Image 1 (tube, rainbow, N blue to C red):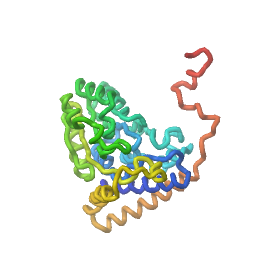
Image 2: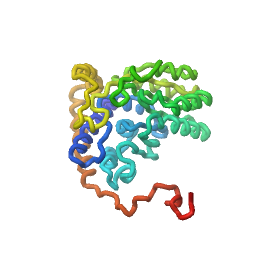
Image 3: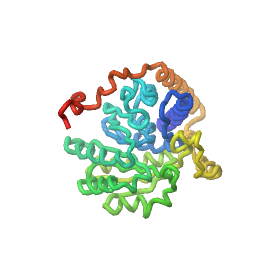
Image 4: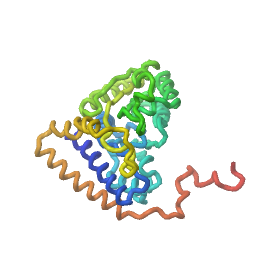
Length: 318
């Protein structure tokens, strides 16, 4: 039931978030992860509360699966004072250090070196905590990702590298932009790398549990390439611009393997109905909380930008 609940929570959250974008409550739009929920649910189910993750511009699912409060997460998307980061992070930069969510990141591939640094710090601190970093297929063309691969392999850091391969970098097909393969890039550094059915929460959980166990035991990094299909737009901007890079038949075929339905079929119908009802109430409350929450005071715009106040903007400081 736990995996289904997480998948259903993320699906419902994204649907509500899209509605709030259309209503003008969430400014700037979002990158929905509809169809990719199994990756977040399966990987985070293999983690402990003291493990850490770094995420992407399409990161709501990861943040929620790691335990973030849906109401505060929705308020963050809406830019409200009650959000996870007081409305400063928004859709693409949500973080909750208390939960081990070291932040989503709008820069393609940038979450991986951050996770590498976190994994290095975890190992130096002792214990067996692990880090998980998410990135998309488009990130494998970024040099910083390959540099991070080199370091985590060389230093055998406790990190699981999770590629959510949805086949597109925005509207460009990965097959037209990426030479070689994701698995090949990891294996070139000696990193064990495995293909995973990213639509199946249980398949993701099984692969993640093995990778996390390896990291905890000192075996170093593992890469999981999770094949997924993005049901919705790359960004909600597409809902009005309507670029044509996928046919309706292709989208319908991708939707045929729905993580929500795959996992929902594995639990009793009555249990599923009860979970769905509970989540409807939870998400109704999250939306109400976000809409009713105040916007930050403009006078506090520079608060929390620097560790010790806005010293970097003081006269004479370069």
